[in-house]
Length: 201
Length: 211
Image (cartoon, rainbow over all chains, first blue to last red; front, top):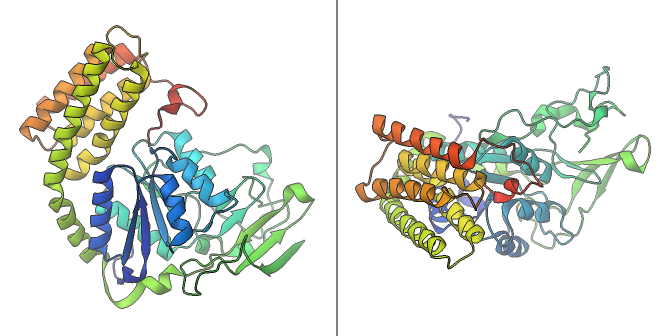
């Protein structure tokens, strides 16, 4: 977290997607205390999609366990749905359990980061600030649309194509955090080497 | 071959130019080295949140967190009420299971949902022991065979432990007593639920949807 910088979130709009009233209230209070200008609340993924189509949203914070549309399906609909109104919106997924396959599934669906419960003001704020400070490039392939997940992309990389096996590496940490690199970390993205650093999503 | 294309993204964005993360114009870097199967596109973020969130008059993260602490404290009583309500709901659901009024699997799913919420919120409000009890209960409900003869009794044990915490408003982890209690609950989980399976997508146990 950048301690010295001052932030004014009054022009930001954050949408909370959670079917638990208490959790929505907690998130609302925390975001209000951060000075977020507009906090929009949705009780499930379906309502959230409707809101996304009608209101400007800068950041989405969604729970995983919801119905009728759960958090993962909601992320899929935002990223790849044909009528999705805002495919590039940063999405933070809240989760109570951090089994590797769940983290990987959410990552593959295109979330920008995780907030592992218990929710704290510090973890929420640090995730929001990270999204603001480190906007991510987005990648679109036939099967994936979401933040670039590569940890590094070196234009002069001359080694073997280690991703050729298509072996998926689990995320480094199941704790609250970002998934993959930030835009600034992959500054060489404009000149990817043919066959060397292509993402295999 | 790398080509740069400026084009509308997916569909035109009809909102005002001030709309956040406007997708109307993005730079697309398209790499087509071998053929259609290998293409990918890179989109640079179309909007800058930083520009809109950075001012000299804002608050530091430290100041924001001080306010956040007050916000959490203001919801303390509401959480206590929610905890009472959760215990009551669990008791009702459990009673319906015992009476055979509802399908056990759907009731277990209902119990899981309630326990999962308490687990996720308890520690935020200082109710670590409540979270720990519900963590064990979630594991039990996730792992156990609904037909296991000891499942109902084991669920009862967890609910009673949570009721104790709720009625006494016990905050923190409960010290040594709390540690012993949680350890005994996890033994129940192990006996009734068996060893942790490697949950994965596509498996029945992986569908409990914990998140």
